[in-house]
Image: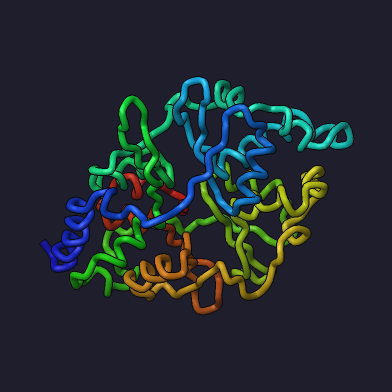
Length: 326
């Protein structure tokens, strides 16, 4: 076994011996929506609270039944647009349709039937990460059995897992001092999609949903990366420009986003950046991705939280993913 493999095992062991309980925050908040709310009201709830997901509560069953995310909002928006608005944009505003669709009806018709996935406080971080990767999800609630009901403690996310690693893992590791372009078995997609400021918002959202990614780099006419369009941007649009979104067939990214040369949400680094620096960047600056560019500032690939955790836990699921995930 090589030195790199020996050192990476120490990180894997850390995940195996740490539990969800170990990373429980001192305080926090969880947004819960009732399944009788309309899709539009839930969209606005997420936007007004600056969050990307909410747990779904069923008052009849008296339990949580799912998680509603930015991906769900974009998928429902596109389906409603294609069915009711695309060929007759003047007939009615898209928000009218979304405000008349109840969440439980939507979930009954389109949900996979998987129900709410959750983990227990005593489960290892290795097991928890594996569940996230295997089920292609970015967050999972930690539930504790309390009398005859399940009590929500907090939610584990990719971001929280990496911040916990950076704050608690103190052993030296050769893998952290290795450039990302020299990491053996570190898989990323070098055919990441890009868009331009002139791209329609509708087309950008379709790429996000079809490719199961959380953000797309925006490039200029010379293919230099200048900004991002993310699912968070789309969630915020419901509050900022509801009238503009009514005619999604003509609205461009440059009409609703501030596309500028320096986007504070975007960190670009060369392929020679150390893996440890990437981990610290996403942990300390609360990033969900680091964009790797060449000397000319053109996109090479994107390193996501999924890539990082998949590599650290030696998961085969990350290797099967051909797009950068949040």
